[in-house]
Image 1 (cartoon, rainbow, N blue to C red):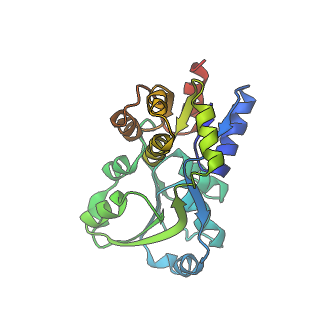
Image 2: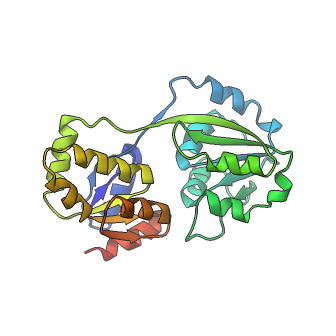
Length: 252
């Protein structure tokens, strides 16, 4: 089992697999780091009461923002995309009992599109919305809020980048491709990085070998990206660790 999440999240998920007696190899395809300069986050936290809604694009956005929050304004709603972000909020003391948390009701499709489809978009006109995000990623959420008349402020709360494809990383990828494995992929960016790295190996056979690996993906958009890159064996799960773990238990 190959876990391609950012390093800290990958080790957390590997521990869950260990409890299921499944061996896991951590092979991060995304590097998440806190910003060196936290001043803009601190400044924005001080202005929270000026906003009508705060939207977090990922659990990483929450984890990098909340260390600076002493107390969340009780009347300030929060929008999140999926279960991972809801759990991240719980870790920082917020849940549906003490905060207005808005997330997609359909647990099988938790993404920005579903969130916007289920929101009261008419009420967004004239509202001031803060979107907390990483340094890379789609502009969909901010653009959607603007489409419905919101005044959008975007805050970059963490750095997201492709890891260095070191000699050690290259050797590990060759070794992983010497066998058939299940690869857990949780972003389209990760699957594109995986194919770019494979193409850098010194023999064309590796690309074909990679395309026949088993991919476990958590969203239809990732499956579409993988299909376009030539992957043949793709299992689409629901989002959230529980759904991924159920799918992995069937991959024996």
